[in-house]
Image 1 (cartoon, rainbow, N blue to C red):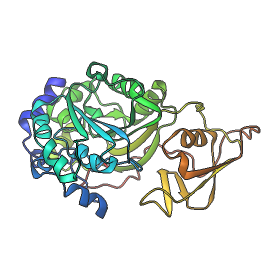
Image 2: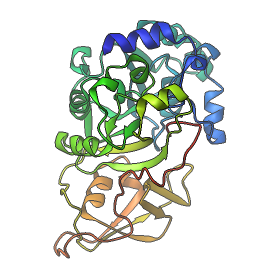
Image 3: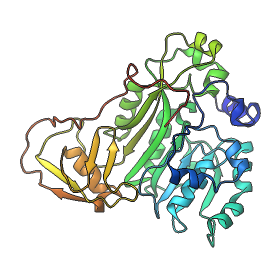
Amino acid sequence: MHDIVKDYYGKVLTSSEDLQTNACCTDDNLSPTLKAILANIHADVMARYYGCGLVTPELLHNCHVLDLGCGAGRDCYAIAQMVGEHGSVIGVDMTEQQLAVATQYIEYHRDKFGYQQANTQFLTGYIEQLDQLNIADNSIDVVVSNCVINLSPDKNAVLREIFRILKPGGELYFSDVYADRRVPTHLRDDPLLYGECLSGALYWNDFEQLAKTIGFIEPRLVTSRAIAINNEDVAQRLGQIKFVSATYRLFKASKLETVPQDYGLSVTYQGSIPEHQLKFDLDQDSRFISGQVTKVSGNTWHTLQQSRFKSHFVFNGNFSTHHGIFSSKNTHSSLDFSTATITKGCCQ
């Protein structure tokens, strides 16, 4: 499958216009800030983009970020502006043709951003084998990935490596494609369906269980939307399988319990995260209003305490009294293929 993907993205596709479905395409629903960031990126890099929207979690300033499956580097150069000159971005990809475009413009973007030194580098390798790229244990603040993990033949290895390199409290924030059932082998072996980010997609429940097994105890769904298969031939081959593009955030946090528990804890958001002064959504079910006390589970308390968001919250209470399983509207939802919005766009 590595060879199929390298051939598809290195030779078959020459621009985003060559894609046969909308499973991996740009989402135009971007903020003015993100549009301004993208406007600073070279047109050649933008043309070779096959991801799912722009994967950019909050509060990246001074962070060390790794982009898995960076392709021609669009997201890397976007995030390079967000982390600032003292942060850094590493892009990893196995497709030499894509990386040739990315590396060609390192100095262009350094000058464009006004940095004395480039804060972006690109490595040729497999996302399942980050250890071979000398990326150290506990060295990365945030890992991002944009419609790529579904292309890996060994998703277990990918998540293990991500968990290894993340710092304690670090985060995997990524968009990908998921199926409402397990995709049959004969479809997984189809080069077109695989290259178009469909037949390599995990059944969503298998993904969540795998993440928990690796150590990402509480996968947090940020956004999701159904994928419309507008190519008739592809739709016929897929049959009744439904697909959703989704953004998840997985934290490398300790002391989490497999089922969220209630200890009478709460937090108060200070309204201090840039561009989120009024409210901050940790995931689609966990909204924090500035200045408002919000009840949280022990898991959410520990996750926020260990994350880069800690200084933006006041933490109320302690773990001295247990009240049973945490029950609130802020429980973490799974993908719902029946209510997700059909769209001509793709990932978040």
